[in-house]
Image 1 (cartoon, one colour):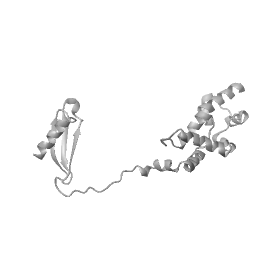
Image 2: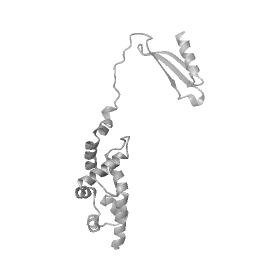
Image 3: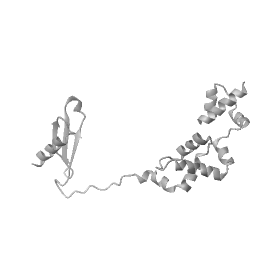
Image 4: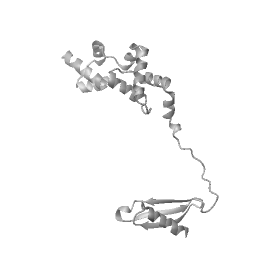
Length: 182
């Protein structure tokens, strides 16, 4: 056993974010008592780091990372990884999330799955021919057949279906609509 070599390997795994003892054992291709080695070399896991650092330092780390994300796109996991990559300190995800909720509660409201939900409303039409819907289909376009169809929403019936050279040309769609209106 070369303890200096193992020490360097453990430091490099820690820098890379590899924390699982099982993964590290697999990387070392041998069974080592990883937890004892971590303690011997002074390498701390996220729980220990979060407990030992002063609150002001931890809060400032989270605030600095939040400041780098003005679009509020990063969640607690990415903020935690950013702190680890830039500072080499591994905080717990729970602490990072709690601090983010204190500092930027609107950011969590933006990412709430129900905030982006499309509000459904019932389809209301007064009668026949009030609203038509048209759509082009490209499944057969590769062999030269583009299909375009128009249907009445209130009736739920097809008003016209055409095979045309290209259903993406505005002039063709306008011609089909005008021929249907006529």
